[in-house]
Amino acid sequence: MTSNSKPQRIKRVLPSTLTAYHDFVQEVLGGLESLGWSKEVLFGVHMALEESISNAVRHGNKHDPSKSVHVECELSDKRFYARISDEGAGYDPSVVPDCCNAENLEVPGGRGLALIKAYMTNVEHCENGKCVVLEKLLD
Amino acid sequence: MNRIEVSESAQVKVIRFKDQKIIDPETIQELGEELFSLVGEDDKPQKFVLNFSQVEFLSSAALGKLITFEKKAKRSGADLILTNIAPEIFQVFTITNLDKLFKIKDSEADALAVL
Image (cartoon, rainbow over all chains, first blue to last red; front, side, top):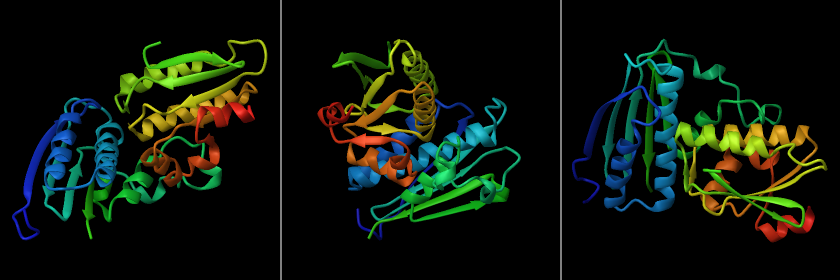
């Protein structure tokens, strides 16, 4: 596939559990692998998806079985895009403590966001924190 | 123990993870319980080596359990060293600055030499 090819789109509505999304994540990783993405870069995509979806289940939907996590992805040979949204009350990502500060090293939480930002090219929060958009661009 | 294997070497407890991926909440919960159960089970100050050679992926929730284990170990006066961390996993530690919290060595032998 060339960079001009139409991206592969995957859209899912996932239940609010911490085990239900693993097949979806593997489907995305398998799709990117077949497009030639390296194992090293796929590790970062795996991490970003894992942390984003688990945040949506834990902190967004608070494990409420009546709520869902909505995921849309676009996969191509040079770009990975994902939009993950929950049905929770939203939050302000800027108030999450910076886990990387020396005084916060033992504070629980915040590491997921730090990992997502480190592995993705662009990360945007939208809809009052109920949605996160991930983008990874290859050179 | 479902999630870890523990062996004793020169009065050091060497702990090896059984899972390649530490993601599932049940796995992480069990892992935490098994690690925590080791702290304080000896009369003298304990020495732990946590060998990551099996681990290919772990989530921030798993990191949270490791941080709690480190706190419990430190509070009990134990020494803890992490070893055999694959480059991708080591990067997770550096991104989150946990390489500053944990003592990390390349191999079990390196850890045993300083414990």
